[in-house]
Image (cartoon, rainbow, N blue to C red; front, side, top):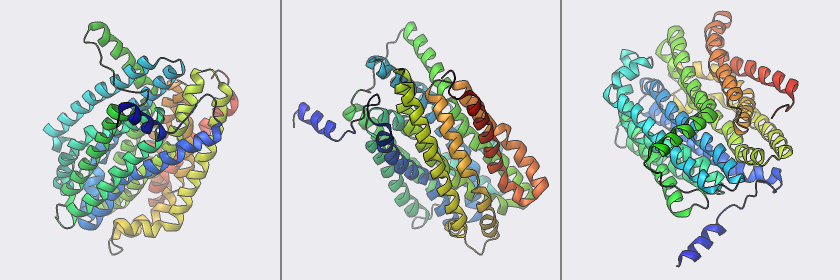
Length: 461
């Protein structure tokens, strides 16, 4: 087969998206459904770990994995930060027909991000016990937590590559390929999780190794796309000069500024876990942490569904913002918020109806943590609608380069409202207050966003 034939075949498999002229509703749906499926499968990486560890190791295993989960989320946050920052800038450059500039931005995002992940990975490898203790690990959980952390580290580099690659691949017009990457990685993780935890009996080590291998498969597929199948976005060789270094630092700072809110979202989930682990263990012991761990495993699913809305709207908003087609920006925002409400309500209803079934996936009904989870999950589920709306607006402000606004909203929902809610609500409502802390923080943030949006009504976008 000749190169031209291969190129033609690739184009036939590519989604033809004209961000400036296509009808926004169908175009949004063509991005959203593949992104949603891919994100759900991607979030299955952590959920499946929890199910197999909970069933194969027990309460101590699932609690240990929950202790280490913030490390996974920090790397995911770095990947999403660079991915969103690079995607927003690259889409604006593409709207200006500056393809070379878009390629340089993409290359810089991968290189700088991988260096940062390398520093974190090296520190965690050299001081694993210090890391797990800093994350709130008790002596009872230490060995399992250290084992999980060390075997997870190799996969973190590929996790970063996958997170960045997903958004740039969608921008390049191939959302179905991005979906395929996430589905393949999730299926690999499911098979290896089962095999390593049950037949091999490797416990938390097996679960971590399965996740690392699955991430490696996803990362390899990202590289395969950009080296063999990409349309406009490809890696571009950077010059080894002082000017090139200064340009990389400048562009990196801009990418970080735009994507920082998404990193904060992942960091906020880590804060949520740290604060929640502390409050649950202080009130309910290790059983409380195990019950809370189920909510922590479900939260990435809630985030993935909400983030699918934001990521699907992002290239449309950014491109039309760069092209000064502001009526299309407004139309995309309305569609994304409506979609967010529908998705969030569906998650809430699903958890209300299936709390017992969800808890049974992770824990045996004979364990005391099981009933704690059954009672608490319906309360936790109240966060889904408000969280989805918040993420849709945060993604919108990132897409139009209003980094400070998106960062402030992320700080509100993830830290400034969340920590006081975790501290104060249990005093007022007891154990129920522990589960209501997250919904309360999301509701307060949603109220702030709504009041500001109504007052400004697109003034100055």
